Image (tube, rainbow, N blue to C red; front, side):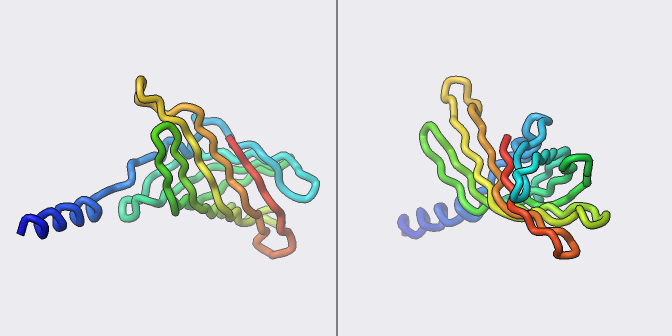
Length: 155
């Protein structure tokens, strides 16, 4: 009987366990992610202005902001989804995917898709995250399908 009770307690802990809300991580301290797009490695900036954890699925975050390539600025909305988490004593790593859809405004608007990796160190003394590193690796494809570029962004 005791083993059954212990098993039920463990199962309920897993069922009610929730991912902590890390929505502020994606805003990158109000700084844009900087990287490259295309075969000629044009400069791109992607700023996340708003980030909110999904109430129904704590592994997903709704984000919005804007992207800038040369003189082209586009607003976007999308999702960041956590698929895997590795916790170490001193270092943590979060893996996932993303999709950001820009406003449809001509040939130079489209959808960003890909994977991300978020690594950080945990300071036991201050109980704070240190050395956060986020990298988004993927593609951007125009809505009309004529343009398709590799992208790489990091904080």
